[in-house]
Image (cartoon, rainbow, N blue to C red; front, side, top):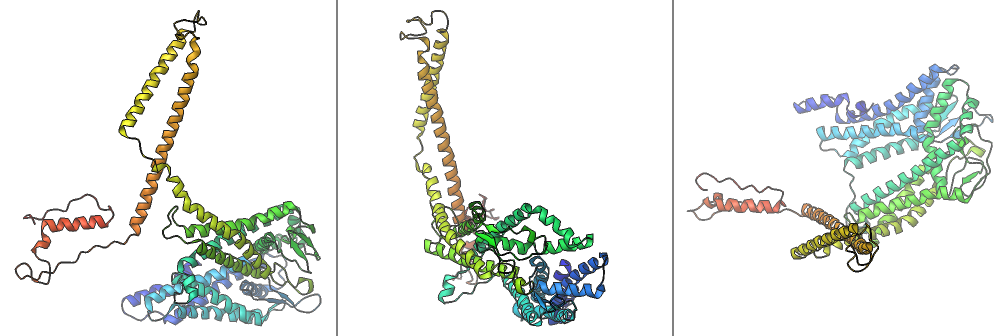
Length: 591
């Protein structure tokens, strides 16, 4: 599928004809429109193939092939956020079905994004006077054309229909958002620049830092939700496995149920992340599931993912600690990323952001993280019916507000702390390097003293060995010249050995610090040299004297050996010692 969406059959023919001066295989707008239609058709085709396979393998194919195709069209629309309607209910009243499986949305979104990128590549080759926004409009139009036909076909379904008003809003909104992101990416992620105060604050570097920090914080939050969801599945493993045979007895039905649970797994991860943030979620009937407690559960179906919901009752300190680790980790990750963007090079204050700018960037990152979390919470929930099933999932505004509060309260102090630490780390490490190096005479004297100590140590050892025989304990023996025992010199030897080891350790630490400081200074100098602009003046001197030049070019002195060596030295100096010590070759004749 990636080859079809990225490299269509019109590209090679159009490039060949355009290269030879002929007309393209299709009009540019027609090719872009066709790209959007192909992207929508591929998504529909993949879901239709899966639904047809399940219908063939099912032992009860009651609805026929037309029912399988209707299911594929309903799933494709549901992946775009379109609300479906269940017509066959026990009460006889239609019931909404609006929960979007987030994993199912990945396929159509990715196909439309790739189709837009491919259209931009074709536009750069064949059409130069059209903007990328117009190209994205044609791609989006082709995609919506197939989407409109799918809505008309799915609305004729007997068991499940389509809410036309929801389709009229959700399909264009999703397609416009995806193509808009594709345009922004193709334009190398531009940031508006102007004289307004807002754009002076939101510089390109700050916007990119906000995007990276909020993305990292959101990723940490979702990882925490994944771990909480996995822990719930393992804790209620028996209930999860027993739900499959209670819902269906045949293996094709169990496989379809497993696929549905797999498609809804990202929704459960978002629910678990909202549970860790504090607001929790609801499973219908006014119920609340949060770390503070769970109550008001309605009669739930035996669905595998619902079996992992915690039991009713109040929470405890252990549950609060486990659930609260991830919001704190989210804020800490955001602050760490903001501090790295504020101080790119450790210990260098040039080009770093101030405390106010760092705090502002961390606050903006917290806001972006909260907005993304609110969007995911709104997309992960939805209606499953009427009455007690009117809403399943987290509250989007409470979840977004909690994510913003946690990230801001933890991220801003963390960003300021890490920034201060990165600014002073280089200074602390360079303190041993500032100590004056020993002079050559001092080094020789120190070596001589070490030799004297070694000779004295060997003499003491020989004296100790000579006094260990008979009469060693008698005062005045040869092994004890001072009238004591032969082993009386051992404490002094031990002290000398300890002092030698301490001196060797201190010398090794000093040498290691000197080497590390030299490497850091060399790295900083290399970075400064790379960032410094290079100005090389290679202009040809214009001679005005008719005897030495014509006035239109260099004179004879330009090719002299001295002039060439001067230019070569200037080039070598401006290159930052990147050029080797190679002398320019002498020209024949000494010129």
